Each structure stands twice: as structure tokens, then as C-alpha cells.
Image (cartoon, rainbow, N blue to C red; front, side, top):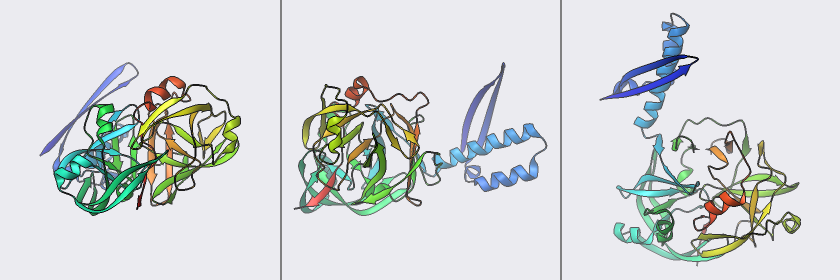
Length: 351
């Protein structure tokens, strides 16, 4: 089988168009092989540029060919929905680093005839939602393959109500940590395995199966959960008493999650940094106290602010690449992103 790739580039006033036909066997060529070709076969600068371009195409095609790169759809600027396999059946799944246990929709669990093993509940940012444990015989997402995965089961129909498509499962850290990966909000792809870490990277800690980073907010240290299922920065007033003194924006934002609806007040963070990432001037939502894990807040990831987020479990780093025209999250786009559809921190506890 051959893959036909086309690329065109404008260089000054001249237009260059390149068409490359790549055989499936060539797709399996490694980047090391490309480097070897460069060293042995270059006749000049033009040949070097052409060969580098071909090697990049080969690498990109190889990533797609072996499942290391998968596309996704984005809803409300932050909800990442991709295709995966649940018990060898193709289903839509939500990618969420804000949950430590993957969740399967109750109707989907019935269709797949999942084995129920225990009752439990799901902890959210502001309450509890009833659930039960089950065994998912097989899960596939790109190169990630898990067997006999213990999952929570809960009604996810509220996600359908907000984004218009049925989501059959929420894929959490328990499955995602099987491989390093990056989320690219520009190309709308998730790449697994070999990743490029941005210069602005922060140390990542895994606590209770949740991924956290250290931040400094108006001079106050804060441990934040990195939540790709959330849309905004959420802070817990009981953990950061100083938030009472920070600028109140006066307009509450309604958020929805597995436990229902809640109205959270907004404040503005004058000075906010995570390692080398400057988020100063952004808005935050204020909740009461965390129901688990001794967190000071949740860092929701939205394409309004972020271009790319990288998770490296080998080196325990998370990298953030901001949009080129970064502007602090303001009331209008925060309301559009949060209102009705925000997924927040979830951890499962047995009764």
C-alpha cells in the first residue's frame, strides 16, 4: 500500500510544491535511517533540504501508521473526544487527566455486559456521585492496550446533553500513564511515545493517581491538579485563605459535573506562574474545599490559553506551550467554556 502526501510552501515570492509517494515499507523506516541517508547521499544543500523534508514526512506517516498519533475533536475549547476500543468495539472516549480512574457510561457498561464487582462513589470538586466498580476486559487507545482494567461506572449522558455526541467512557490517568504523550490543540492530535518537551516544563508529581504541579499565585505556593477535562483554574478557599483578599469579578459561573451543578465566584490572579509559564492576569473560580488529596486547586487546560501540553511519565515532567497570542482567560470565554460542561477532579473510593 502506498501513502500519497502533498505539501506546498511559500518562500518569498516563489511557490514550491512537493509531492511524495511513500511505500508502506518505507513508512517503517526509522529516523536513524533517515540520518544515515543524509550523511551518505547529500550532494548539496538543495538535496539536504529535500531529504530532511522527506524524512519528516516518513516519520509523521510512521506515527500514524502504527497508531502512535490519533486525531481528536475538541468541544467547548477543552473537552477532548477521540475514538478508542472498548472490548474491541469502537467508541468515543473523553481524555481526562483530572480523573485517576477511568469511567464507563452506565448504558455502555450494560451493552458491553461488564462484570460488576463493587459499589462505590466518585468524588468531584464539590460533592459525591454514586457509581459502581466493574472490570473492562480490554481497552485500546492508540498504542495503549490495557486488559482487565478496573473502571468506575456512572451515567455520562449529561456530556451528550452538552456537546451533542455520546461519550462512552472517560479515559483517566490509570490508563494514560502507560505511555508518554502530548496533546496538540492546533493539529488536534494526540501523539504517544517519542514527544518533544517544551522549554517551559514543570516537575510532575503523581499523588493518589492524580497528576500535580507546583504553582505560585500572587506569591502564594499552590499544588494544582493538571486537568485536561477542565476548562479553567479552580482554587479552594479553605486551602488558600488569601483568595478572599484577591480581586472579585462579581459574576458567578455555573459549572456542571457528575455530582450536578454549582455556582462558583470568579477572581482575577494578578501574578500566576507555573515553572516558566506566565499565566498572570487570568481568572480563577473559587470552590470551598477539596474532597480529597490536599490540593490547592485544579489547572484546567483550554485551547484558549494552551497550544500544546506534554506528559512525560519517564522524567516526571509536564510541559506547557502557550498560544502565540496568549491573553489571560477573561469572563466571556471562561463562561462559554465552563458553563454547563466542565469536568473536574474525580477520584473513586469504595464504600
